[in-house]
Length: 413
Image (cartoon, rainbow, N blue to C red; front, side, top):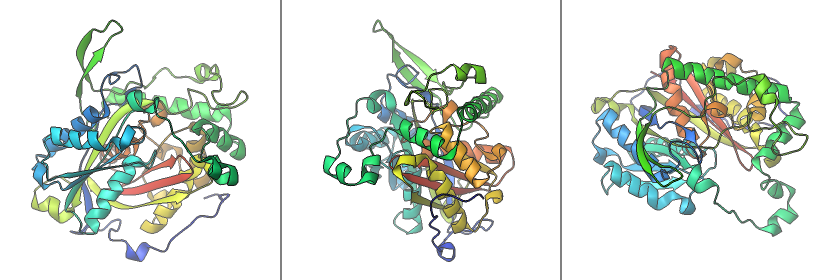
């Protein structure tokens, strides 16, 4: 691992962890099912006329259908969401009730920006570990079509004017990508090549049918420009471009700086989608005769300078590895969110991660990045790929606006 420009916080928590890699315990927090919708194009895709609560309801209902679990056994559902007004609190509760969960199943929403879906899963896992609940669901959803473009965030100008770091939290994400590229020497050509690779991997996976296990087909109503509506079935990711090329991407102009390197082609796509993960202790799953995809091992979140927020995974991953007693090469698959090619590339380079282990079915540049959904979507994508390739250990990780990195380790059965 090459040296990182900021100190890494490495808490000595290995002895306190409840779950250990390579060992099975009745107390393990296991994943029984993880599903997602297809990722569709924001404002023009198959979900352009579908609201976030409808997307969420579909994945919640799919967990019940796939597992056959009695919905009354699910005690809590936590939903990651970033852009919806009032944190999607009321629509999320409505979605759970519509999906078939009883009034006794509680619902909460949270916003940790791009890591919201992962934080939701970790919050449920932690509640189970602590004995607060037995069974829960971590989920994430984002309708960027309906919620992202209309939001207005107001911040204190007093804080911004007296603290440089606080002021940096206001930077548009695209400018933080430019900062990462400039400060760490990530070239436009490297970013474009990384992006082409993401599309090629995703296109190959889609053609081979490798996404079918994780995607829940959704009936959606779309309305055309004349007001006519029709029902369609959305079951494939829409943003994948099999014909993506270096020549094509080279023609795109920088979006955030006139002389910059971040373009619409080497950044994540604006998308709509939802995902959900059903978690419980191993002993509970065995008692209910439910399948076990794998287990949650541990997670962490760390802070980094806001003006280069994209480097977050390069700091979170070493911490989570330390907690699990693992090294970089012990991990078989790294699902690192491709918010921007610049920051994903930086993480890979800084930590010395083999490229073939990174996003083997493509990442957000090809699939899309519905903000609150992505953290849960990565779990749904990871486990089928670990199983298909007979691999064991995976990491899901992402950068987070305002300068945070988050990562979690998962182990396949």
